[in-house]
Length: 236
Image (tube, rainbow, N blue to C red; front, side, top):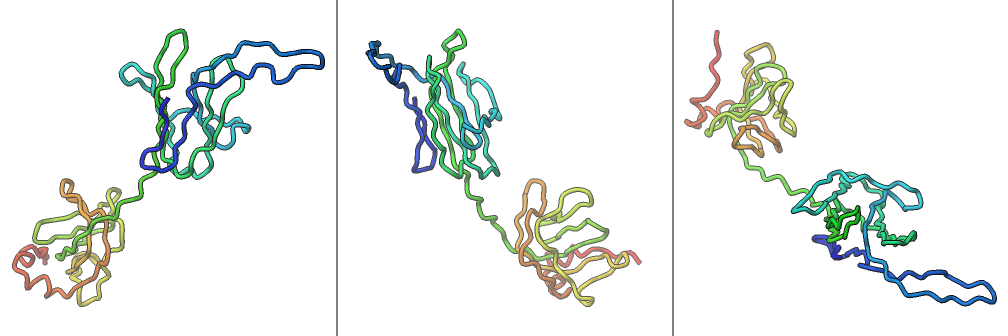
């Protein structure tokens, strides 16, 4: 049986079989005579904490892949220790071992032998992936906030949704405007000129992340022809 950790140096593998020790010791005056038996691996389990605590985990997903039974345990956000238990045919004792820390998930694949018996083919675990840094680019344009919770950034490439009341809201702080940098349209709501490092979704045209947002003088947007023509129209 193959069992390993993807993208990890450590590995955990259930032995494919173990020898049955039989009777561990003979009473005085007796001798042990038994045939040597080898017990094959027939299953495994994953525990939250040491198996003596009897907290066996139920697989998060169970399915079949090319006729084989596949079970997956997910450990996202769970920093406690997990243990692997290897089970062998005809043996009450099992082999146990603590799994490495920092795992994201483990998956076992078993071949159906019929009669309720399975043969473990693979046991694979993978570590949690480090979060990828968010790629941002600077965009400058009109920052509009006409009503509570609603905002967008309009630059030379069009309109990007920053926030929608009761819906999408970009991560990060909005630019803060001085009175001279802001055109009030609806009481304190209106628009101004701003630059920010943003990550955007080009399909939904949502701003996902805002960093280093800074208000600019209104003239900064008005002197750029591609942005000047997109200045919001104010109805008297």
